[in-house]
Amino acid sequence: MARLRPTGETDKVQVLWWNGARWGASGPFGIATMPLDAALDYIASEPLFWINA
Image (cartoon, rainbow, N blue to C red; front, top):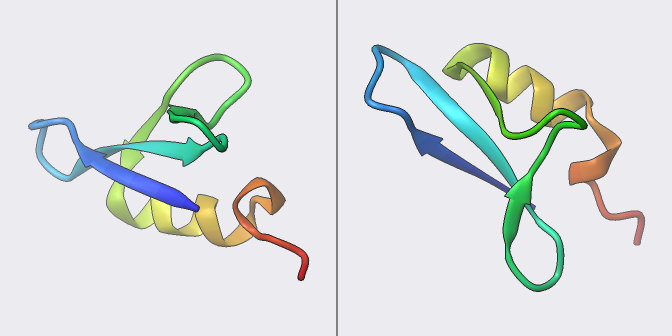
């Protein structure tokens, strides 16, 4: 599950993921911050956000 949090800078958002207890950093080096289009591509291609059910 992903959460997109606006940064207040043009169209940039922070991408967070739910770790079961709280929203946390989605990247290995902290919270990923990028333009909205890139964030949607990141979520679609990153297995971290998809549950294999």
